[in-house]
Image (cartoon, rainbow, N blue to C red; front, side):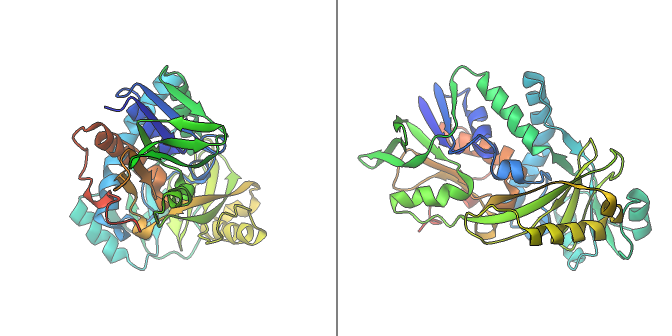
Length: 365
């Protein structure tokens, strides 16, 4: 059993991995190049479902279903121990005028998910703020969103209360220490940090770090921009999605609208063009937003990976090194299952789901 584990990356994946692992090992150290949870974990919308779940492989679906069922109890546990409520807010989700609506309904029937076609008049009754002109709708009740900045704060507070967990922010990692084919720690700007096991969960930066070992991990940064409006708390009773853009309601009336998909390297600069595009989409979807001010506009970097299937498990040829990264657009959605699976594998416990589709072996260059 590991005595000391170093986790590289302090987003939701890294923090929740540490949270799940702390009871099984002597010491956990989480390192982040900046402030914990301030990259894609903070920047995302927090819908606890893939945007189009029927378009993903069975591997993503398995993680998503396990996580969706687990999120409410995770939020309750964190709220009880820290006093910070991650606000898992169940609103349901309407998809409007989908080109592949038949595929969505077939998927729901196969998976036993509560997604169904609804009369468009019923959608307008349920969401009176919806813009005109939509002809078809499908709906899935029970879909929640989590207020991801609060989830990060809650996880961070829970970890700070554990005596065997250390959080090291603004800790730059340049590579890995190795001895006789085994990874024995990480190289930081403050010197070597030794470990029995190292977990790489550095999001969009994971590929850069793994390259220092001569390994090619196909995880690349994919920029996403979002905007935030402030409305009355009852303005948007359900999440809605049309033409690739979505609106998410928080409990206090904040409305998030996103998002762009841009391959711009590590550039996180918000742009005027994206602001105008997102605002136009927001007003088309919910016309009353034309009178609502944009209170925030930001960009983040998703860890893009082939087909959105994350890498979870041991790195072949480098004993002691583990991956939990490459979740692309679904890091928040898949986090509970991904982190439990990684901890099961690292500690030798029976895995909560079949780990085969996520294994790094055979998927690295």
